[in-house]
Length: 257
Length: 259
Image 1 (tube, helix red, strand yellow):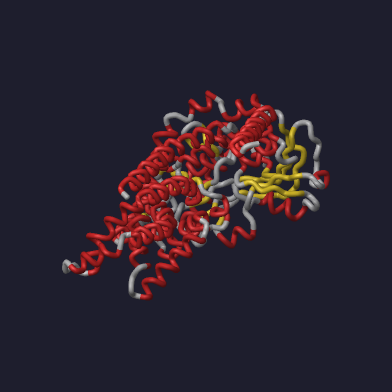
Image 2 (cartoon, rainbow over the protein chains, first blue to last red):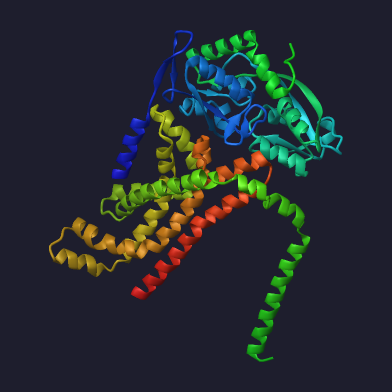
């Protein structure tokens, strides 16, 4: 019983909620004092992935800008994607915001609040070099790899009739499955697939499905102070060229306007 | 054929089949592919020293936290299970049946989200791990400890009571110490199981300094697209569990001698 009591005491003292005054003047509350805690799901190159001992990527740099405007450091927590897209990570106070190359969808909007869009994406198809599957129809009777809880999985469920979908927990496993031939093709967002095909010449992107998706950063429903701060930072970065610089750094091209 | 000859012939056939199987698997496998995937020396080197200083340390810390909490709760549950008060017994049985019957994976997810949602507090990571692993472990340990307590001869309690001890004093001073001697081997076994269950901690969400062995290995797999880190993580699990297994056998041997 003493152990339980000790645990409860520790839990109570570990609970912390601090206020940081953001640039907007409204008070932004952070779950961990002096840190902007970000929930993400690794790896999602080039948006967030490990390089050496650090997590880097486009999303990471973008959230760093928000953290800088708040005068705090960013801390990254790697967590399963279903906890991110259902909003439960945010509700449970695991993190202040979610940055996971996440598309804004009506269903997700019910679970969490999104910032303004910071990236445009569509679904795309990755296959091995020698293969020619250029559409979902061509994959009839074949295996299509999808990533759990993603918009790609949703798209495949709706449009890939007669195709056997195989679900993977993260992007790394999905890409490896395509490369090793465990599945015939993989569906995911174009940004990450083009990046992978560039670094792995034995694979290629054969199709894009015009899904017109927008990425947003997620905050807990009703956390308007932080959402306003994120929007402000994104807007500022787009104006002063920081955003374009980050885009170029991670995608090698200027953003389409 | 005499019985002894027949036994020998059957045994020889068994060995033969075994050798054939091993040879067949070894020939069928693509060794160069396997060597590339699992024995990449450069990738292996890159895992050090973090695999020890972060991953191994965290695995041990998580396991010990869960074990200590689980042991305390398990003892309490075992006593409740043997209590003359019916509601205590019912509670203990319900707890044990529930947590023994539900996958640890679900407990981790439910606890990681449920507790902060219910009490609107963000809980320290180590506390969450301790609760999740401990709650699961306690159910098994309670049954082990109960069996141990029941294995202490009744005469011990009766003698203690006739010396004027209260029943709770007799339990604490006489029965429980002897029960623990009996259950040490199965408890060490439980520690091995908890070591492996600590791999589920990733479900709670981890920052990089909180990675344990399994998460560390999977993360490095994604980073290097090489299975070598998985092999390394596995070896480090063995570095923990093999000595524990040895300990279990020693404890069992000692218990057998004492009898």
